[in-house]
Image (cartoon, rainbow, N blue to C red; front, top):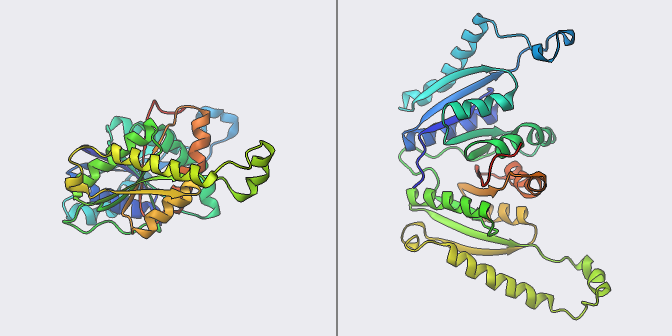
Length: 310
């Protein structure tokens, strides 16, 4: 199983960051991990004439004490339940500071609150959440304010897991995490693959390429059968004894299929793998992962293969 010893939870006091703290604390208690509750003080913009190095005014000692006390109040209910939580205050730009603290604390997981599906969140995902997901040195658990509450004490963190697999190295890595979590809970895991269908509007395109007689339905059925076989083969020997795996091959846009599968199964968690290595990966990242992160009713665990994106 994948051990988690240190969890980082950025916190700004918003509803979604408080929901993220609930999940971070629950995971900290289950794994016996320390939770670092981090607030990044961005400060008041300084005089532009002072140059880029002085882009914000530093935090006064008295104000720092107030922020530390505020973080302590947020952490108190979870500390009373036995969770080890350490509060930290950083100054600067949110993304570099979050990544810096993640490395310094050797975080095995970052639990990050996101807005959800609002228009403002599209900007947030593009500027903060997306970059953290692509550059973090560890897996990231995203939690929206709409996400289900954290599990009750004494219960495993995630008992119903949906793990999309596209047979890339990134999704293989995600599957390893999903299997580890499923093993902890003896829960149910759904391995799924989405087949992008050729829409009816493309019939003219097919005819243009002299493919009008092509058996598209038969081709889709063959792809589905192949995907089912590969998903079955991806399940390690013995895993059926503890994770009750379900194989699902859906048709349609991947992000819609993932969200529908999670909704129908009342999933506790979606596990996604992304590459995060180059500009092409960034485009693919935006097409599926952002939709799922933004709209999921449950937390989404994002793992990445390859070195962090720049």
